[in-house]
Each structure stands twice: as C-alpha cells, then as structure tokens.
Image (cartoon, rainbow, N blue to C red; front, top):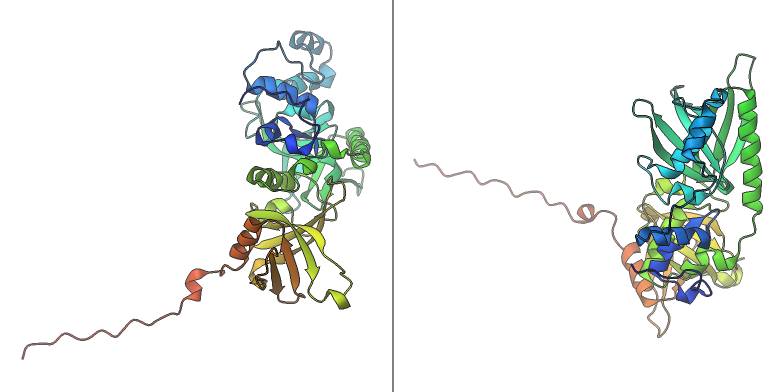
Length: 380
C-alpha cells in the first residue's frame, strides 16, 4: 500500500476507503487518532523518519542508572516500573492482538496483582497497565520473563468496586465488572495500592465517559451506512471491541463471530394499535445462534442494545414483491411480527437466505427404515 496523507482525507466520510481504515486506528472510546496514524503510515511503508519516541519514552541508559538508586520501586523480575513501561512500548508481547501498545498513549498506573478465581479460589499473578482510556491485563511468564496478552478493556465499559475486608487479615481486593466483560477480582499488595487503583480507574473512567466525541472522528460515522463489504467487516470488529450502551446478557464476545450485518428499518406489523409508530432504524447483526438488534444515536457515535432473538425461534417470511420495496416479515414464538425493510437488494437477499435456512438439514429429511434382507436360496 502506497503512502498517503491521512490529514487530507478526513474531511468527509465519502473519501475514506479500506486502505485508509487501516491507517485510522481506533483509539480511546471509539475515536480515530490521526496523529497516531501518521506513525503507523511510516512504519507500514518501511520509511525511516528517525527514531520514534513512544509516550513517556525514557532513555534506557538513564533508566538503568536511576534504578540503582531506586530499588524500592522494583516491580517484577527486579525491574523498575519505568523499565517495564519502556519494554511494553518497544518489545513484542506474546499473543498480542490489535494495534501496538504505544498507540494507547501514556501509562497512568501499573503494578503486579493477583487474579482471584471465585470458583477454584486459586490465585495467579497478573500485571495491570492503566492507559488513559483502557485497562490492559497481562499474564507473566516468570521463567522467560515475558508478558502474555490476556485482554484490554475500554474504561467506559467497566465498573470498579472495592471489596471490603472482613477482618484485618483479609486481603485487599477490588472487582472489575461490566455488562460486556466477565467479572474479575484482583488482590493487591496492600491498602495503599488498592486505593491507588480505585482512584486512578475511577478518575480515568469518569473522563472517558464524559469525553465529548466528535462525529467527524467517530469510527461509526465512517462505517455507517455499511454499504460496502469492507465497511461491514470493519464494523463487525468495531462491535466486538467497543462498549455498547445498556447491554444485557452474556458478553458479545461469547456470542461467536458475526456472520452478517446491515442497517434496516423495523416497524410493528400492528403499528396502528401499538406504541411503535413508524419505522425505526436498527442495526441487525447475525450471530451463529442469535439475531442481535442494535440502535445508533443521531450523531452515529454510540451504539445501544435493543434486544436479541434466538434463531431457532424466528423465521423470515417474504412479503409481496412490490417494485422498490425490499421487505420481509420477521415472525417467531412469543413475539409480535416485525416488518423489516432493507436499504439495498443484496442485504434483502442475504437476510432472506440466512433466516430461512433450516436449523439442521439432516433432521429435516424423512427417516426411512432399510428394506428387509432377502434370505439366500439354498440348493436342495
């Protein structure tokens, strides 16, 4: 991919293509950072613009020198926090997924904690790294002195709670939970460390939730309407890693990989006598076992959960084929029929095909008993 100028191509959504999407890396709570993408551009094109400075990038020589006089701040493996931060920015992390760590910005706080399992009561060491708008969870390989990636959580999608001590000998713990993440309990070395985590996460979480998102920099504003295949694929990835408001049920990551999605308009078949008046814009997302229904705000910067329907209990029925109308009726058990109107013919055809498929092809075929065996004739 040739070099291109990102700053000259963010004036409108129509000028953004699949190549530019790779450069406009999603940051913070769903924002694309144009400044960070310049670094990605030069890196991917193999250009050498001199040594790149990472956020809070210390000089390794000075770090080693200062660490001799600061042994009280040793974190893990005899390394100081500054040394570990420098390594996170510059060295590869095993099983890492997504964009590079340095694109998440400065490290606000980090320390070694223990992950407590509520089922087995076992404890395993972890290293938590708090960025401006994300919390990184790393496992530790002590024998090789390696970090192992376990996940990164947007602060806007989690909550933090202090677990009170039962007595003076109880461990100092706090819990991270959220509608889209599994609950995790972490044990800190002392009360001061627990307080530091609580205060830092709450402070950054408040700023993350209160942050005013600009529609011109929102990922959704570029991907919606998803009228091209590359936009659909990018939107699938966006939904799996971004917070969804008022989410209910199991985390979206546990629903499997999205098979198909598109913007539609949904209305109640009996709209004249029901509260739902007129068509409502919705984003339908097809998963292996469920049909997820989402909505977008008017600025195309936030996604809201509206519900989900199990595929085994719903079916799409084609409406009368009228010119210019791409509609089908969604019926199912314990639900009122919904009229779904598609924008593009290819979306209409895909939904009809996907939602009319039988659950199990072998089970739909009649079972025939084999014919009886005819005994062989014997010579007399």
